[in-house]
Image (cartoon, rainbow, N blue to C red; front, top):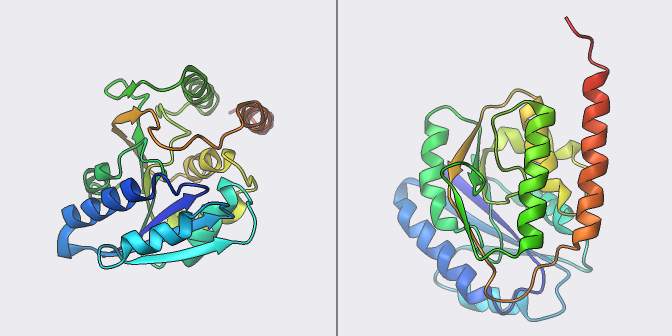
Length: 242
């Protein structure tokens, strides 16, 4: 089996060492049963992100670095990463490791149990958060509750990037994702649920970023979620009741 690890990066030079160390440790945990490729998408960084990733990964981690000439947003970076992925399983992770990629080996076991998508979930009753800024927590927890209500699905976290997918899910769902920004993460999960793919949650810990700063513009992200949720409500209202 081959795993494609897709990591979008934007101005993450300060955190590059921690990222490479965590990904290398994750790969070591998986062992020889898994072939591994790392696809880091540098989304138009203005710092030394690409140079540091290449230098740090040399001899430690198989790395394919893809660069955007200008910053296009998280959703665009994910689509670029998916286009370059060749694995049977595609995983995504945050470049700041606020969700720990060392959870991936445990998440892969749920694919073996028959699930198609596994989501690292801090908002699951068995998950937790540590020192996360109130604005980010309010956004992620509040949005996830609304999606859970609208979709009627027992999924607690819709905004987290640490996930593993069967490649078929990405190839089927990603082409319909329209957002270039953070909403794309939620769009992919919602698209998988609406198409009947089996989704499992892996309870885990969401920690505060320790290096660099978040790229999310909170008012814009909130507006994107409100518009997307409104579209989902309208679409469900048009479905005839039996």
